[in-house]
Length: 117
Image (cartoon, rainbow, N blue to C red):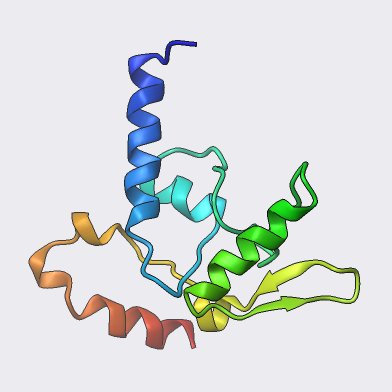
């Protein structure tokens, strides 16, 4: 199936944003959507509750958890078997993509982290 130019641009924006997530950090579908300027949820690492979304293949979520663990992200298993990540430790929620930040925004990361505490 051929992709429209708009779909291709959307895919590239999402893919580029996801590639900027630092090793050992995770974010949500919605946050990537916000960063790329679209209100749609995206197929990203974990949902807004910090839970790895179930897949059609039972091993899919476990494989995703293993990949995150390989980057140093601690994945917990809840009482119902759900796999989750602690956003307070591993979350990545910048105001804008690092590739789009002005050179004068270097101090924003510290200010933002302090504001969230």
